[in-house]
Length: 529
Image (cartoon, rainbow, N blue to C red; front, side, top):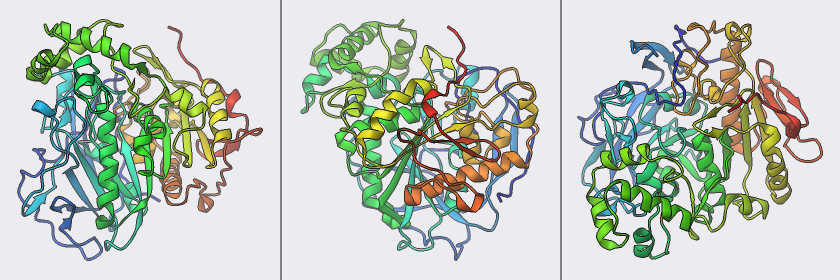
């Protein structure tokens, strides 16, 4: 069982706003001093050679999470996550593509320039440029490294003893829709999965208008005649990096699982549908993010022209594009956030290249990447900013079609666990609550981008051994799925059958998980507009 210290939980009174953990000394990756940790015999030898140069990391076992609560008060190191005596080595801020700045803004990710010597990967990369800015109250949740367009970095945590271990690999995409979020914090890099024998990779990528804007001039300069989807091309580049380099960290490049929650789940679905991602992953998990929405290229270009006009750029040719690339990221992100819908919204584009058709059509035709696939919802998903987090009854028909078109198994679960003190007040699990259990940050519930925390619950949730049992179950379940494609946890008494007709099996994950059938008939509470 996980060894953790519990502390007071502080909830947030705002929804869908990014709250990040402030830990460590955060500077631009590679610019910090060499870490002085004593070599640990049971951790992989350091440094490690990647295809671009040597990287050096840090040995950890348990980490102390620090966080701001919803009042703005800072709580330093009050929550311990991980198991002492089980060392893993973490590499923070490894570049997987060149900085997408200057003339590389709104271009597919380009190769990293090799470096000489050892790159000290001991600090997180900056958060991707997004709204709000430093003048906002919520800037206090941004890492000390700040915000930047220079964010194409990933973090790797390995429990391997040698580079011959060939451990399963788990690649995580953060929530926050396509406009916000970050993996530059300990909240998304706890050692739990690694301590269960899985290599953990978390990825930063471009967001918002800097990651997903389409425009006629961008389409014209593209060899593929495509624009938009740059942020998802970043994820493909990250998976290509994993394929080339993860063996050096003790990972198996032929056993890679992608996982995302909320907006991260949307990214998983895009990669399932994209032919460019074929062969780069072997299992997929979509947690509370089952969306297949996208725009046509012409509509996306129209919105890009609208956004450019907000910036005072009306030329739709190369000269106008040069003007746009000369704008600061602050100007661009501000314009996107003040532009009224439907003048501009951030979304996926059917560009004919990275996304050849709508995701719905691709899934319905059985043309997606055929890998074991897990889908989940929480028992109370909600609507924020016009986006509805869909109940099983709504996504079930498409899942049924997908399962009939796939050779691989599909699994479904509904997350229902909630602390006892909240349950007696009528609160059920909310959007993103399973991430707190999955990553072990129970006393800091809601600190994960994309998690939508109830605003009416008491600050102390009354955590019990039930909550920590469910946390352990979540970690073991995901680790087993990453290893074999089967999420059953026999050691904890759970055998989980695949979702398929006519039974439509799913797992109700609360204390003492229950296998049930009829997933498509399950509904969740969604507030009215």
